[in-house]
Length: 558
Image 1 (cartoon, rainbow, N blue to C red):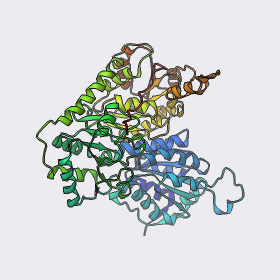
Image 2: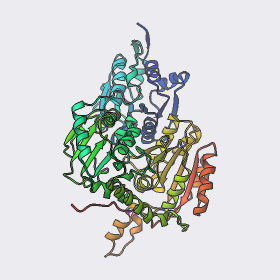
Image 3: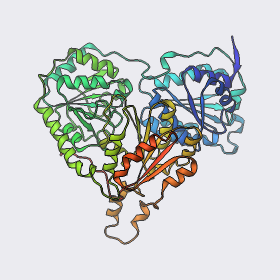
Image 4: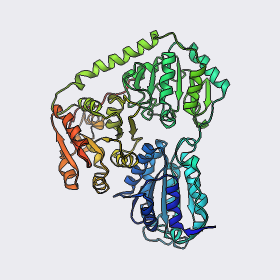
């Protein structure tokens, strides 16, 4: 039986599972990091543990395999906070942390809190590693848990404030790599034929069916099947943000993103459906605008790889426990095709056309400050066919989700699931995963302030992302509510949502980035092209209208 140090065992195991980069704040697993270098694993030193978690998350989503982040004992709580977004987005991040030895507990050890419970709400699996002899079991378990079923973060808490006690121990074991768990989906459960035939019968009978594609479609790479089934039935398709791009968004049957961060036409069409086929969606609050679209009580068919999600928020007529791609393939095989375009599909197309016509004046606007709708139009026209678009939450999520069409199967859309500031470091992680693809980050000034220091990481590590800042010098998503609260009182509401007007190009240039500030809409396209061609991390700071708010979601009458 071979023997090696714990540090080498960890490095060899990560390498065996295909991990090409890890993200950390010193000092943690320092000998392991040294042992990784000859294996070709990149060591990305970050400025905060949350940013390390976000980079690992971006890596995982772009690479479709686990991302890995490290933090020593004092930074473990920060790392746990950073896993929230990966957990909400069902992204497989493996977090390794250190902790003081048992004899230090209950004695106010320096920088020590009991951080292990903080990982419980944001991981699928969390375990204490008390000795290197546990590494062969628990490292393999971490990868299995991360990518099986619905992907999710996992956590191993290693003995030693920097995990040094685990690193120094000897491991008497071969490095065993379970190849099934190197990427997701690890398995593709096949659907029950009876359920498929029953679902097909319901779909053939429906007069106004709608397909809702969620993140499970993206995870399963079932986009072509979504499009094929939609075409077979002339059935409109709406998506969650995680499912955006499941059908090319210039396709006649594509209606757009549903829910809270949504197109009005998508909510309208989904609200008029008499049957909704829900594929790979948790039907959470954002995707359904808190369970108002589709309307409560509408008949549904649900396909999901996780049995706990079947019928959770919309009691379904038929539940199909299966991989999205396989289930859709079987439906395509057995379903009778519609004779062509239907009255219902024409109505859905009309809704989309009306929405686009209403939006067009802002998309064509030459106003100064720049309208964000015009910025989105320019980004959409500029976006390379193989680009990865990484979006922050808040208004950035609404602008990109509703107004930048993903038209090519070779494009990817990665969205923040809730933690403002996620996009900047997540884009860097994505660039590590797919270094040959353009990675474009879309955020606001409110988002970029969170992790501005990581621009130095991008320069140092040559992570050549393009960061577009929708700079309205504010958090203007809160503007309307704050002004409502101040409507009948005196005071200074601007203290609650307005920033100083900062030129981010000066900061970015000082860190070594290529940077351009854009104040005229007609200059946007040239600036974006120059940033992509710069061959170094680039920032495009766009001065946009502080009063331009994203539209509120359409809510049907109940």
